[in-house]
Length: 340
Ligand code: ADP
Ligand code: MG
Image (cartoon, rainbow, N blue to C red; front, side):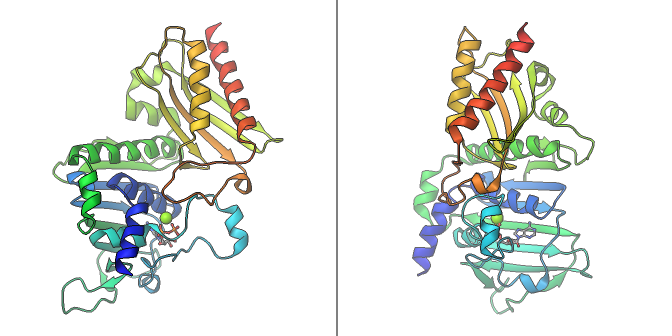
């Protein structure tokens, strides 16, 4: 059974960057406004995330890493309203299966102190042989600190499939930067650094007055932010969606497309939308440059297919083609408006 679970876990958590994505989403779900990430050897040796969110109660710690344990799905009706995607209650369980140890230190606002617990293979384990596995009181600030150590130590075929620690770090940093961009205008700051360095590779402020464009400037520099056009908010009642974003203008030229797509505040792949944007730009940029795109879509949750397999970040929704057409028509208006 352990082997089967481990293989299943390795399919959900297949590299540090996607473990990090799950952990970031948990921190955001917990209402965090500051998320600090520290990675050792690209996250393979150690992947740590600290947030200032609601924390986990002592009594909830024992089942935290149990498969299908989630606090986010209380009845069937919630399923259609879920604004999150993929399978539920599998991320922490999977991380505990593919890491040598997963440690959680958490404090809720009303608790007198923090509690810490260690996990392996979905269950509590003693921090050291011979000790009790029960959560123990400790010092800690409000929020949650999760540390996963030695990722894939027991999944050698996964380790072999991964490239260098540098490559894994860059992928993880890329995920952090995308969330930092989207949430920068929503009051959430991010810090990401290598454990070996005191200098952050990414740092955005946690401030309610920060605007998305400020976050873009902080992350990508003013040369990039100056070239971008505001894809002004558009609402479509008939199709049940709204969209906003930033898109590159006429002077932009890059060798490949940068496409950040958030649907209902989750980073997703939406290949249909990407393709349509590329077609739009290939007509708009006659010399064949590729665009930079950040698109934030809100779609009525009941229209989103929540049953996508957890290994897929591709999301599909009802009336997808019509929505894509409307979004691209709006982008075209913005582009031609800026051109005239
Ligand atoms: P899901 O997010 O689908 O519920 P996870 O395995 O990702 O499943 O997380 C399991 C549960 O652990 C969550 O439902 C939540 O209650 C709790 N949890 C995980 N991370 C955090 C966090 N950073 N802060 C507070 N609670 C958390
Ligand atoms: Mg989760």
